[in-house]
Image 1 (cartoon, rainbow, N blue to C red):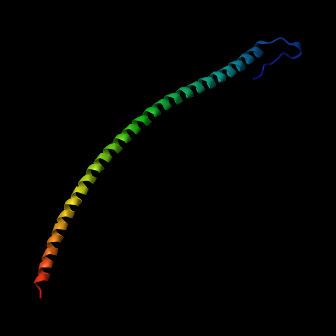
Image 2 (cartoon, one colour; image 1 turned 135 degrees about the horizontal axis):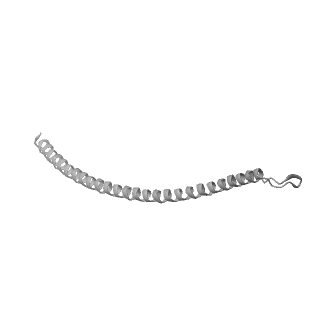
Image 3 (cartoon, one colour; image 1 turned 30 degrees about the vertical axis):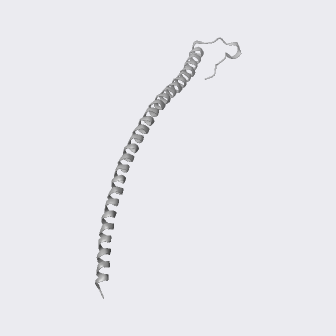
Length: 111
């Protein structure tokens, strides 16, 4: 509420003064609430950003450790798989060589 000035040189009465003080108090309260709300929001945002940063770093470290562990497991299993394939290949090759020798021997015996 805007200040009320006395009309036609009237004296400021108690009622006018009370209205002006009430309006001033309301404006002052509104400004204080706005500043307080803004400061609270800023502090809350700072705290949330700090916590979010910690959470992000923690999750990043966890993810990196998990990926490294999975990489080690995959490397281990891949190495074992390659060794098993090599063993099976050499067994199969020796079996094929044996069969090939038998076939050659049978072919040489046939007239």
